[in-house]
Picture 1 (cartoon, rainbow, N blue to C red):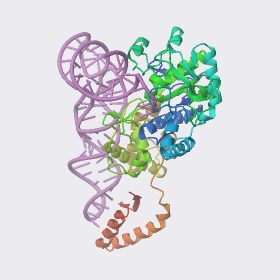
Picture 2: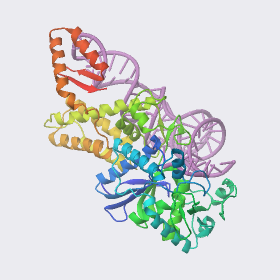
Picture 3: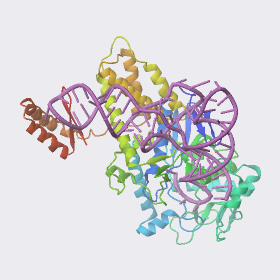
Length: 486
RNA sequence: GGUCGGAUGGCCGAGUGGCUAGGCUCAGCUCUGCAAAAGCUGCUACAGCGGUUCGAAUCCGCUUCCGACCUCCA
């Protein structure tokens, strides 16, 4: 299965066969969150998408070092390379230490990632923990002549860089257009060129988050942290660099320039970008104010939400769209995912109790092949899920005695479905947390069945309705009664 | 304004030069004391207009509409 994965590379705008630099090792760097506020659902989608990619590569047997940073310094408010950074600004508002902000939102981020069942990255470095590496990198870029210092701030010289490099290689824009269309910045900084960006920023004396450097007290620019940390943990060139599509034009473009200036070759061979989560067709973002927080979704505590949706429903919803497509968020779409997810897991539960036959009247191998082909085609999880629903149909058919399956095929089907659902898609069963209720429920169901046997339907219906009001759904079938939490 | 990407059935979403995913909804059926749940069956869509082709929703051109990026954002 290895060496059959086609990955869409933003650099070439096409799918390419993915072969790691040093198989079976894979180095993957993904731009993580900026922890100055709660992550919203759009942020989560990116990390769920890369979690799928990480999981599938692991499933194929690759040994992946997955590095995802925490940005806890250096991100600026506004479009000027001076002034307070986001952490200091937020901290002033909330009357706390900047690192208190960082700590709070980092913990919140990890909690949400856990609920969404994303695997933790191999390394999760922080920007503030790698100031020395960033300073080193800035020094090297200065030495290469592609940066200049003005009053304690160091800028990258985009125009000089462009003489020998293609600055816009990632997004295929024309430098002239960029220069012509870049907004006038008000002339308050000391940049030579309009596209130049800060590598190191001089801090005002009152600035709390600042570090000593060869250029005086300051803090790192927005782009250098990813270049420095990816280089440190993955080397000068690694396999995959990922992030949200919104990072491509500026952040990743500048990362490539920094790495080229420092290391003299491109940092990553594959650039992968995940698309945006939209609300009514418009991108969900902090600044647009149309964001949903994961907590609001999981609790249903939001004016636009018809009800609460569980983390796994949300994850399944995200995986039902391809990572490079926009995905539109709505109550209807979430409800559809909730039901579909439930149906999928119910079929998975049936797997262990299926009775094999001598022969198969179904083609498990073809089903598996289609599932793998989908994932090998740029991680096409919607198609994989469609194939899993074909498996659901098969499982139900076997359960009903309408379809026969051999022992070997059943084992193969069972392994495939479970691996894909749990290991690759990263889904997990929910609603089983009420196990302490089980003995109680057994008793209630027994009493109700006794009433039913005596045709005392008034009592049996009373129990059913009361339980429903208490959030427990009874499911009667011919042989038995089961229950689920609503 | 520039660059790029989209427009798929009631909804969400894949895909693709001929065999036309999948989920949800809806309808019918089975099961059932009734209901729910569950299962089965059914539901042929690709913005518009031209063109290429034996054949296009899929390729090309134009039009309309939408979005993203160009400024912090996953």
